[in-house]
Amino acid sequence: MCKRVFSFFTALLLAAPVLVWAQRGGGEVKAFHQQEKAKIMEHRQQQQQENQAFRQTLKDMTPEQKEASIKEHRETQSQENKAFRAKIHQENMEFLKNRLAGNTKLTDAEKSELITHFEDQYQENVSFRDKQHAENVAFFEKITNDPNMAMEQKKAAIKEHFEAQKAENKQHIEQQKAENKEEREKIRSATNPASAGTK
Image 1 (cartoon, rainbow, N blue to C red):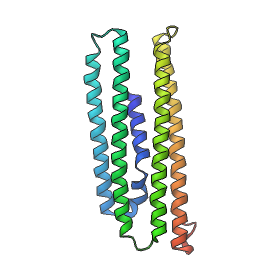
Image 2 (image 1 turned 135 degrees about the vertical axis):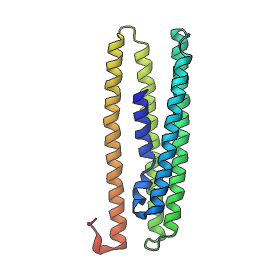
Image 3 (image 1 turned 30 degrees about the horizontal axis):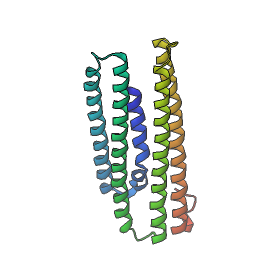
Image 4 (image 1 turned 60 degrees about the vertical axis):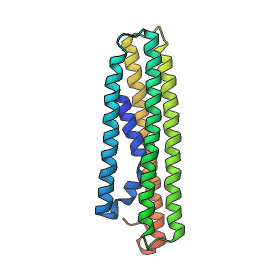
């Protein structure tokens, strides 16, 4: 469960690059950021409670029933997380659009380019998470159905699998940060050629 929490948080980080972009906005941005962060924590806590209650339901099941129930539970939570991330993204984009509407330094084309940039990144993130989810489902199917693996071997394989995904997540986040920096510098140089290449 701990690894899924890590994956969930990493995915949520990928869902909100708009907030990082908009950080220079002062109190309004900070308040919005804190509000979104609170929603994320509440969602996480709710799922942790669901997971605790779910584990209690497994006690009297046969191994086959447990396997089917766990698979269904994971899929349900995956869909919940997907819907939650979409909602957070929508809120972030509405916030960004409202802030851009009041921005007099950027042209309409630059504003549109920013919006498109973050929408494209969000779609990349959706694809990235879907790929990892499919990998996880296949991995757990393989491990669960391997009679030649002892429980300790399975635990080690699970740890190794999630460590590899952790590295993938880090690389993906760094790539998006670099794209955001490039986009920010491109916009900055267009609006103020003298500041191109400076922070």
